[in-house]
Length: 75
Image (cartoon, rainbow, N blue to C red; front, side, top):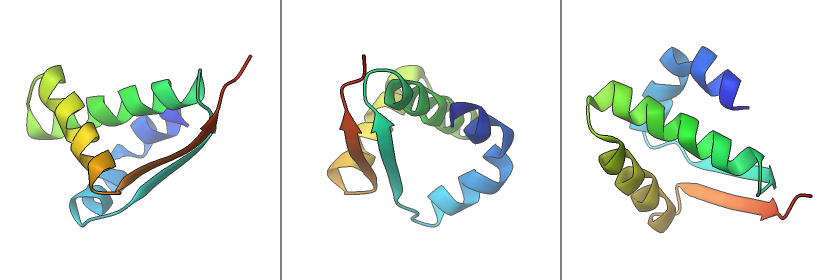
């Protein structure tokens, strides 16, 4: 999934900017952290901001109900 985020970032970013909600379902110990890192990197690249600002952005997305997790602990 994180590879797809990087590959399709030019299509994905305008959707996020327009208010898209991101739903992550899967392995919370492996997949979700990688997806989260890819989204933070996308934000940082698009906004030309620090990683810390990217982390604050993804946290805001979560509080606003725009980054929603349905994950489980993987092995």
